[in-house]
Amino acid sequence: QVQLVESGGGLVQPGGSLRLSCAASGFTLSLFIMRWYRQAPGKEREFVASITTAAGSTHYADSMKGRVTISRDNAKKTVYLQMNNLKPEDTAVYYCRALSSTTTEDYWGQGTQVTVSS
Image (cartoon, rainbow, N blue to C red; front, side, top):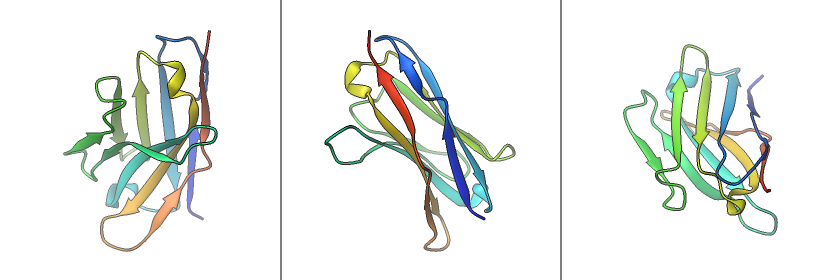
């Protein structure tokens, strides 16, 4: 059974940090491009960050560039999103997504809530 389970969200003060994790099971993570997205209340889901299968390349949304780092540990079947200097506008549900590099497989997690507030 394919699963992506996000964790690490929560309430943090402005300027704080969080590290989100996305644990994968039921498929070979190393063959998938991994991405993080977020969706704020009343807004469309938007891209946050992406990392290639061998972690050779990363890409970030302009809104978060310099404040987030995506990484992966294929042996642990986990992808991470380190977020620093968080702002209230970063409040959203954060989702991870797995895109196969060889097939049309496309999986999403259930999301983890991040709330930035004082």
